Length: 570
Image 1 (tube, one colour):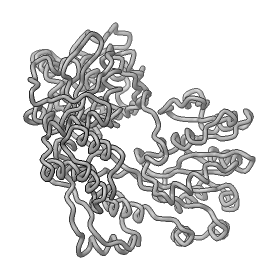
Image 2: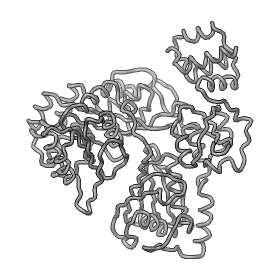
Image 3: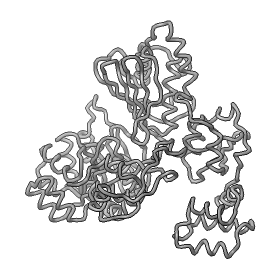
Image 4: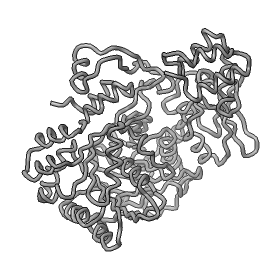
């Protein structure tokens, strides 16, 4: 594998510094084995005797950044005043100084563009990026962060307030503000901390003797905080006030929305979709974080294989028809839909969307928020759209027969309709629509493709362990994709980069069922889902299991993670 562009520039800078000769540079470029990333660092330091500081200087010059030797920097009590320690640990960075409105931050990953923008958003200061060694930054943190690290002060205040007195209750109309009490600070801190850590959902769960706060990060719930049981009523009431729910109603589930920017002085511009439910030990709350500043990802970054990406791009450029995405909640359907719309959006195309809720605001696209309380449903929105001359319509979800009928009608009358459905795989979507009362010939006439998807955790590239599968593992991967060779498993101890979990980030797996003549004929005949799946596979469809095994063979995830998401095909 030849040197990449960045690696070539690094070696060139070392040559300018007199640490690598022209012959050595040519020899590195001609090596047949992989000499990118850590492999190149090892060769330069072990074989060519380049010091760590010289290598850091060369990398910084190649990337147009200033090098910073963190090992000489002394962490003080004020180091994490501006940027919290949890955030710094998560992104492997260290604030090292301030000059006016400039904040100097040492980064270990020069390609991380998310962290600088979040720091600028939270602090209001312009970030000057410096390049430092990851090892040096991690050493500055010392031991692992305490469980309640950022919550220590507010937890201590709550402990004092609730030790002797009964928990206070908020009432509708109370004049409250951000600093009026420990509960208000706690609710703000929970949301801000979750946002910084990249949480998708916040779970507040009342147990028999305490309240548990859990964050879902990369699809897995992690316990963050335990509070006294007395805190629960006031905390839930505060959250209800923030999303204008009835605080006196504790026997029925309620849904609401928090526009968090109006409650935070830090300018965190996020919305939260809130759901409350009466549980056996009190009211539980789940909040889905909707980051309004988060941009959609390009289609190639979503995990599509090259074959599936080419097919999907061809389908979304069709003038009319119906494209459906299916999968459980949190499987990345919305992100894929938004990415598809962003790719095909153009000034000469009219796009209308009906969503509940609007998760991302897209420039150039007309979006409508549903309000079931006043009768604004997906079906009524679709009827309105059909009178507004759109080219493309996105419906958040097909939930009932009425919405399904109008969706099919729109797809058959010259519109491209994109929507989601809750089914386990792509072929079973046909049975789901049939159960809703849609005639098979209407489905076959309107359907362009169905994309079933899931999200799997990526194995940490920093600490993953290579091995050759044997026995049942070898049989599973060979049966699925006819591949044998080295794959990776997670390191049970993990590393600082992945928070000792062995996994970092997520990737999508997709089952793309494109309609063809044989499939249309099968749908019209009312064939069983299993038969439709066989026809789709003959037509070139890779099942979710096969796509997950491709990700395993590419070293993106582990076979354990793949099988925990999708079982092997029968």
